[in-house]
Image (cartoon, rainbow, N blue to C red):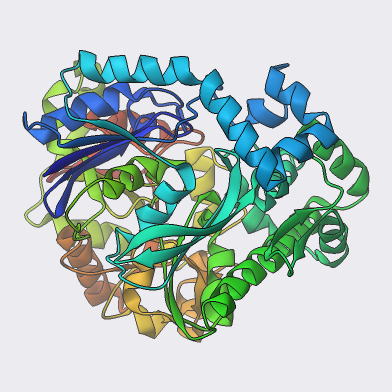
Length: 561
């Protein structure tokens, strides 16, 4: 059985399932070079059909029944005078339509009617490229839940979804029936804790999609008072077991209130307060969901953009009575094509890898002459040993090889590796990549070394996809300070040899040469660009960032200058 999943909203993408395997998954942003690209994923679909190898699809599933023309989430709440922003400015009407169960049913019905032309257009575009098979639709939050529970093979436990706003809903609790998420209850979008964090991100001067900068900045401030102010606006209702928008409002009016509330507080304290408020609300939401299920240790599956917050995920893992916590690797809207495909695929998928996109080797022959002329190949007898030697000498090496990762994290095939021994590498890398970061870069470590450097409270597989932080050990503070945050945590990628034998062997060689088994792993991209996809983009990003060396496929390159 072959299934196709398509998401046409924020961070559009395509997934192909064949039998028990994911054969392709990628997001449109990697092709257009526009972060979180919105709309019909024409380029990702074209490549997906190549990997489908001409097979007929048994099902085609779109995420959601409310595809809209809005190009970014920002337009829904901050800018553009659309009917939705004008509605959002009317708090009472917005609360009635998006804050109650009856209003939610009505608003969803209205939105489905208003967005019918877009669904019709997308159906036609799918048929125009020769895709057959019955077309179905997956509810937004249910697709989020499936992207975790059905991916990790869960048969029991709870799936929990929290995001900013999706089809009128901002959160949900899902019981699992042989892994399939079945709705227990959802929270209307007007009460969104994700939107609260989004507003603060905006007020701090960051762009939508840069919520991680708020998370990093939070460790530098004292958020006690700010958290109190925010929780007075948006609280948790234990009787209804959901978030409750008391006086925050929605959209522009909410931004205005927060601007007044937070005047005079430092950026660090505002970030810390937002982080504390988010954690307080979501941890209680998850705790109550577990208690409602009997209170015994449960397997928890998390998805939705709010769970991109790795500090929140750590608190859930360490404070609540759970057996294990699995975070969807592509937890935001970028993972919806996967969740949609899984929901209508009759076979259980075995999760083997996230290297599901473009194969770098397939793009080598298409590199323009002007790009190739600016690099020179370095002949080496052992590429892995040479990369390790360069890292040991303090160099920064970009790696682009094999198939591209699916999701927001670079996991070794589109990564930049650097020594973690000098905290100054953070400033150096940020300057080269034109980034402004408040968190240290993440570490990559072999599975055999993970417990030596990190205090892992969950099974090692939980840390394979860089979705959760943990405390570091003293040896890490002393020998690898570049990957330690000010709060003593790190977000490691624990690597098995099966997942990425090349990088695994590089780490083994590096450990032989230095005695240290951990290095920096950050995504291979220039600031405000998506992670590189093909050979041409890898070379141009390498030249722009002026890194020391580039692994391109099975060859090593340096700049000609």
